[in-house]
Image 1: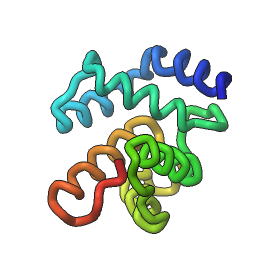
Image 2: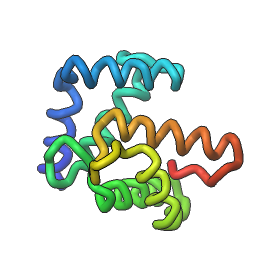
Image 3: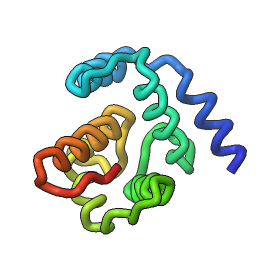
Image 4: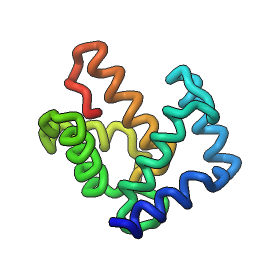
Length: 124
């Protein structure tokens, strides 16, 4: 576990590649955040904490584990696997089976938006 936390701490501080940075900034604007917000920094740390295989992206399994962990941390019940898979499929890029950091932000944003609109319970 310590190795994973050290990895997450090291990685979240790295500069985003230019194309990813532009995509992230666009998503953050939609979420009412910027690259300097503490909430953005927490989400970036969280992404790398879930990246168990340390390849800068999240598999479906890593997302399921991460969402379950977050629910337990908040003294809640993890959402059903089908619900996590549905949101995962909505935000992943076509032809990919993994989420990039911008995809992960979209997952968070869609989950929050869906819960506000009563379309589906929030994942986080």
